[in-house]
Length: 76
Image (cartoon, rainbow, N blue to C red):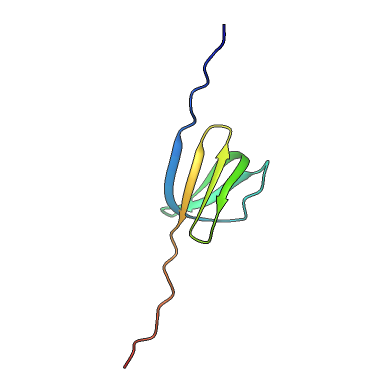
């Protein structure tokens, strides 16, 4: 008898990475003023300045950057 694997839940959040994501290590990010630590990262699926997607043992994360764009000087 074969057991079907359940698909991993997708977690989409807006936050900020505290440190660089590394395979085999937990990801640590800041979310609403709290530090969140995941289980060990198994795969980095996408990494851009705006967001990073990675997979852990339990979930697939999509972390969007919550930093604000740099202010542009007012044209006078």
